[in-house]
Length: 127
Image 1 (tube, rainbow, N blue to C red):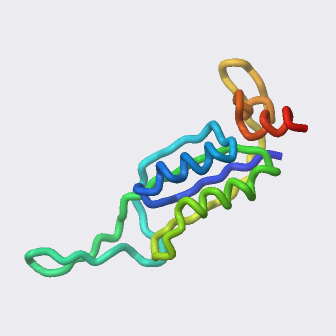
Image 2 (image 1 turned 120 degrees about the horizontal axis):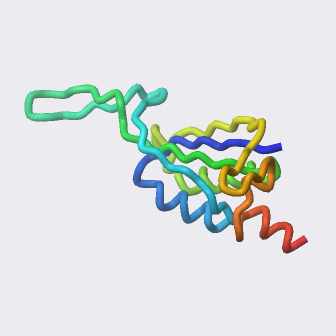
């Protein structure tokens, strides 16, 4: 089975997350700039005319498709790289993926998500 990890993180933590993922063998990912807020509801800023509420904060969304057996170590890597202990550290969602199709090669399923040197190919070589 295949999973999708969607992580919403602070923008300044993106390079730390990319390095943490590289360190465990995650090669493929997508990144998008998003805006939103969680439980904190945004932040209050002080300006010349007083304070005001900013409720849509800039965040980074990272999407990764991977094998079930790699999910926990990927979640741990993202959490270690992003955790500050402060409100707004982010959130990670895990979704089931029904199927994957690589357009260029026509590969489907698990083969479609594998890249040269990624976490699955490294594990297969080590086995």
